[in-house]
Image 1 (cartoon, rainbow, N blue to C red):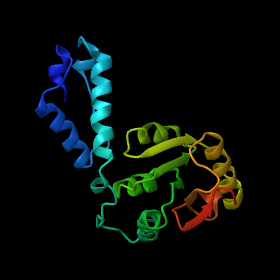
Image 2 (image 1 turned 90 degrees about the vertical axis):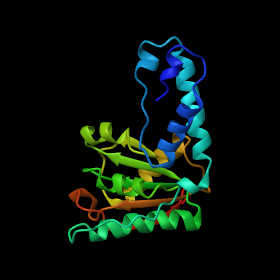
Image 3 (image 1 turned 135 degrees about the vertical axis):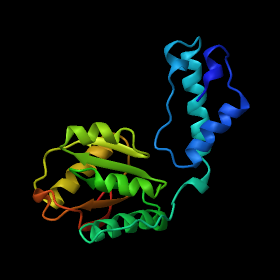
Image 4 (image 1 turned 180 degrees about the horizontal axis):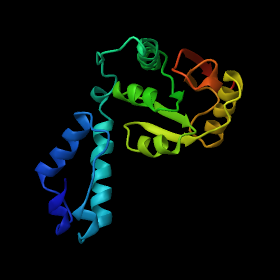
Length: 196
């Protein structure tokens, strides 16, 4: 995307525009290739691309896309919960949405709406965890202590606070399946304060 930076310290205007448009069009990830593998300025190209992405992400117009997804009967409850979680995030200014998933479905669905908040995904499925590293807005964590819904939510809140993602007064939206041990489709949404 920034091919001129193989030999030059700065990108062309068209390349800057290409990166910015990719973000505005909803790309989950942007990629460099020759610019970093054989280019003369690999660090500069990564820093430049990062600055462009950061600037575009400061624009509110890229968040909260209202996409009408087709839902099959099996996923209609999960889809409604994901959509509601994103709308609720916007309404109450929640700092994050937590979803516990085995398939990754809720993470993909939430991400498609582009909330302006963290999307924290907890899973015991390493394959999904690796895949989610390329999904827009998602921060994935390995987690395998699904005891009860209340215990899991409490434990996850503790981990997020300890890692510095959220503070005491921040609001958090939790999505899970009940009973949590069944690892079924999401059927529960809970709003909580981090210090509760």
